[in-house]
Amino acid sequence: MARTRILPDKEWPPALERPTDNRAEKIGEFGVPVHLNLTAEEQSEYNLLWNKYGINQFLSQKISPHRVLNDARPKDCLWHKPFDYQQLPKTSVVIVFFNEGWSTFVRTIYSVLHNTPDILLKEVILVDDFSSHDHLKEPLDALVATLPKVRLIRAKKREGLIRARLIGLEQAKGEAVAFIDCHCECTIGWLEPLLVQITEDNSTIAVPVTDDIDSRTFQYYYGYGVPSIGGFTWQLFFHWRFMSEEKLKARKSLAEPIPTPTISGGLFAVNRKYFIHIGTYDDKMEVWGGENVEISFRTWMCGGRIVIIPCSHIGHVSRDHDTYPRQMTVWLNVIRVAEVWLDDYKRIFYSRLPIRTTSVIDVRERKKLRERLKCHNFKWYLENVYPEQKVPEDRPGFFGSIRNVGRASVCLDLMNKDGKRIVSVYMCHGLSNQFIEYTSRQELRFNHDKESCVTLDQHQVTAADCEFDREAAAESQTWKYTEEGQIISAESGQCMTATQDKLLMKDCEVKNNELQRWTWWEKMKGGNINVIS
Image 1 (cartoon, rainbow, N blue to C red):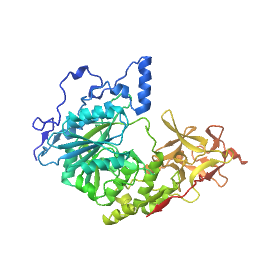
Image 2 (cartoon, rainbow, N blue to C red):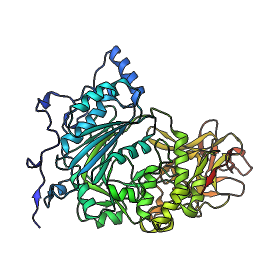
Image 3 (cartoon, one colour):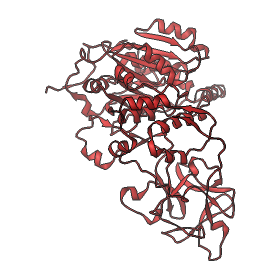
């Protein structure tokens, strides 16, 4: 098979050529970080924009909307059989926005137009999810009127990301659809390798590598190495994790697609008819959150596959903070996921659910979809797609929050201090970072955001990767929970001891020191979850 080095192809020009002004004089070009010395007045404007958008819009508006980035692809991607541009599917790119900052949004649009061959781009569909900011009204209408292949659709009411994407999907005319967040920068060659995977197997969801763009300096972090894959917590939140050593060794090339158990959700491409066939999005979900895990379970369990494509790179700016409330909707969304897809494993989810709600949750249509698609069960998913996922033991009486007897208002609490995961004491609230499982191997495990074990690091109690998961049990992660309620380190022989605001390791006292005694506590939660299934 002939192979050629993949470079920008003059035969297949982009949908919109990039302006030819002097790039060297512009800040932030090629993704280099930018640090500004601000006056007091400028700092005040910076703070206002930062609080409003969770992104450094003060700097972003000074960076060119057409900025050039380096080629983010690994070297293995630069030598490949030539793309058959005339056979690859025409693509509709759907971008949903709600009160997005002007500069990051416009840079997203231009990055698509500048880096997508015109022959492959059917259209760019911008879906306004009922924004209220003035710059997204007439100024945006005026801009769109000057851009090729760009359409603007405005929702008549606030729909949330999930249903707004469905509005875009309903209008899409391309054979393939690519969903992109509204604060991204596509790089050269981002679309072609995604479409190759979709063409070879139309039941594939193809995911680009998500490179980080710093929200303060707009530095582009080029992910040239092996990408992380998607995992999930038992609260059904997405998280990134490293590939297993076994799978790393089996890779033949850095260009090889990587199966991923879950997706982050912001960026992916899919055959439009296939996506409709498997049920698109759950339109009963609100705003966003949980839809990515739901799509992941459904795709794998119902005969499809999800792969990360190392030869496709898109930069993404993550907000420093949420700019609108959505916490309760997230929990309602993941309850839907648990009820439809987890089968008996949903007991693990519910034991970690920090809320109760009187909302009525009707999942009958999604269960009918699962039945129609003749999907595998969740046990099959864990065994065949994600065997690395730790399934908690949750032995009765040995999971929940661990409360101190002497200071009954405080519990063991996982917190971050100076970039380190510290286990200390804090007022009992029973939420995620206080949920602990005591395993039959005498580990104290946190698993709300990632699997980590309570670890004695010299004289400090921390949380670290669980050694037993690497078949290397460590005394520093072994704890004896006695009938008297003491928690004793196998490494030091000392007891966990609560003080006013710290957790210390001290010599165990023969007489019951109530500051060295701990008991399991479950937060009382009001209300019931009313699920119609």
